[in-house]
Image (cartoon, rainbow, N blue to C red; front, top):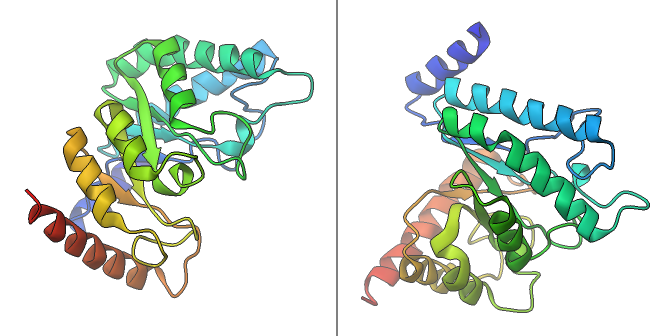
Length: 231
């Protein structure tokens, strides 16, 4: 409503493009993707549709589903049951998201965050199960760093099917703030044909957001320049 219109105006005045929403179920109650309770799953789906409305009003076209605390396995729920529950929620809301021109990106997360959808392969399996153009894979460097395969290999394998990309380090900071080299990562993105947004995502906000954004951008630009020289 009016608040969303004002937020969109403020972003435009600051020359900021809002591309979408992330951490969709944070600070919610009574919502859970893999709950055995059909009413809870239905309510969760309806909330995601409401978020798609907000996303569009703010000018965005994508939503990233991470939300580890609202997807981890509940007592008595097997992984396959959770997989079917999640697929059902996403499948049911896809027509509504397609009407709003919003794409939902499923984010595999590391085992330290959740015990449901920890690898790109598992995420890809869920995407294929839902089988809708508006439900795609999301790639996150920190999460991929927890897999046995190296990040660049995973990007070459899954990048062509990804709808969004998080640049961060395994140390919870931004690109360039830790040991992960982003030159092979950006080269793999280029080689995979990925041509969408790359967003910086951090969990450690030291020293401050402005410094993180500036230094992350400077570092990524240097990496991209190096990648460009390898053509």
